[in-house]
Amino acid sequence: MTLRIGVVGTGMMGQDHVRRLATSVPNAEVVAVSDVNLEQAKRVGEGVGARVFSDGHDLIGDDQVQAVLIASPGFTHEEFTLACLAADKPVLCEKPLAPTIDACLRVLEAETAKPRRQVQVGFMRRYDDGFRAMKEALEAGQVGRPLLLHCRHRNAATPPGFTSDLMITDSVVHDIDVTRWLLGQEVVAANVLKPRPSSKAPEGLQDPQLVLLETAEGALVDVESFVNCQYGYDIRYELVGETGTVSLGELAGVQVRQQERYQGRIPTDWRERFGAAYQRELQEWVTGVLQGQVSGPSAWDGYATTAVAEAAVESLNEDRRTTVELVDRPALYA
Ligand code: ISE
Image 1 (spheres, protein in one colour):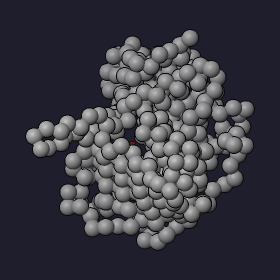
Image 2 (image 1 turned 30 degrees about the horizontal axis):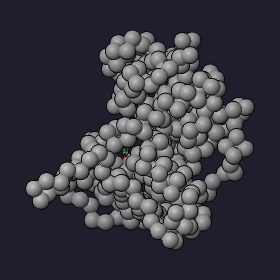
Image 3 (image 1 turned 180 degrees about the vertical axis):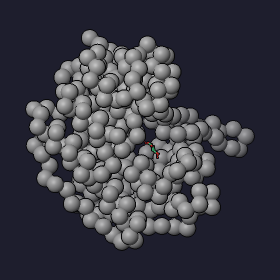
């Protein structure tokens, strides 16, 4: 059986997903792509023999399309996800589920009217071997009760127009999701500290930031978000428990020791660092949908993460600790 997929958005991530779905995910076929940039959509669509639309709604309504992957800009996610729910089509939506709490709640409302989950959010770190091993070590009791989580999230450079708020809503959202998933606790408060901005960052960008999160059971999480670090894409984690620590391997691949030096590769960006995670994410999504179930990160995860991100942005802009209030978790996401 093959899942016929439509991909909304053919920018950087859309192209990456189309290529992977078309070439290396078993039982997946990309039958349609859409983008407001029609020329780009045509180039991407022609490469895989897909039909091409300029409007994502037309793609979602197309009879050939059985399931939808949304990789368009964040502000369009709500309308396309709601359209997929209205058309009864499973959807994998890139993060964020939607940029505001209210928009996420509208998606929750639409999905909870259904008997089963249909929405998955693209928090791909949950599919990474290293992140999974950290969670397994914690759950096996190897380090005792978790107390602290140190997260480093560095990008080499930002695209034009990147803002201080986006450092949280575009980047730190992943660390918020990992915190909730790894520790199995909601985040209840945020406090953003602002060191001296790097002279290598564009004028006016508060880069780096230190985002402090407090969890419901009192663990503390510090996230360094540094998006113009210059040297590559660098993700590091250390979980500190009562009896030990778990660290995420720093560098993927091999390290060469030679002539009194050692060398290893630092990824260029997240597509390289998390390539295997994206692969597994798509594969599990396709297999699940073909079996009639969607089980990856849920719309609830998307909502909770956006709620924490909103609180953190408020802290960033108002220089104070902010708290997070979530609505009751609907039974669909128990
Ligand atoms: C980017 O949009 C992503 O989603 C990456 O996973 C993240 O690490 C990066 O910081 C974001 O800009």
